[in-house]
Image 1: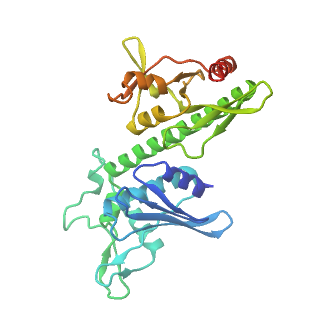
Image 2 (image 1 turned 30 degrees about the horizontal axis):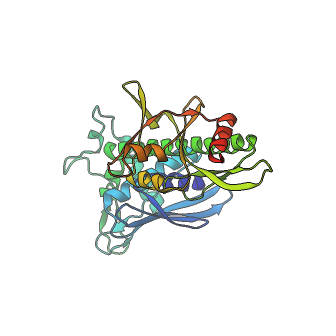
Image 3 (image 1 turned 90 degrees about the vertical axis):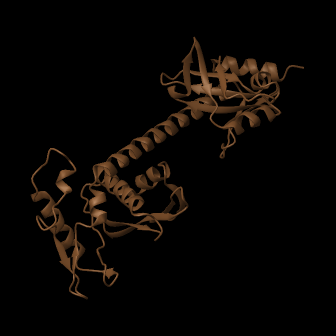
Length: 320
């Protein structure tokens, strides 16, 4: 279960973008296009090993952020987590020693250090004193430091703060999606009670999420429709001089809505469950003078979305 929730979280977290998905592995891409991912290996019932891997071109800081994000997620969702690092000998460019022994030695050493008023002071050392632990490479017998660049970045309060911010952003994104699914369900049930037809679009990047098709008195589909753009949450409307303002974040949506053959309605559900809708296709045409002027905001004057309002729109659209 923790693997599934991790993949979902990564998909909804900037700057990670889902690329390829398999049963026990998931590739992601950074905004730069560089690849990274996670792979799950099941060792026994309830026991598994999750590896993170990176394109060689991925910067160290990006590797640390991704690794820290995965680690923090596991700590929150798995009962017993142990993090292991692959240590590589700089002389031979190959793995060295036993990972379990190396990490235990490093963790014991870190826990033995006294607490400091400054969180970063715990990880600062004077050369020649309090030397961090190391491990011997069995191939060349050179010592490999355990407190390397990756471990120092991993423990950095700055990195941990950025990971927490990313986790909070993904939680907000998932919460908004959950609210929008609730709105979809409410639209479907309300339209059904009005004896009309509703359809959800699988792809809504262009700015239309659903459509309502009206039926005639014989309950036959007429081909006459309304298009719906759904928004759920209090963040979409802001007060200004006694009016509610909806900001259009994507200019493409403005043009797309105005080009539709049927009315486009903006449907907004607030945190108290109140749903209102407003026709925006013709409103935008008027405000933009048929596309001559840019319009980036809508003064939202929505009416209550209910069975009666659906039927009023039916009468209007089907009017002879």
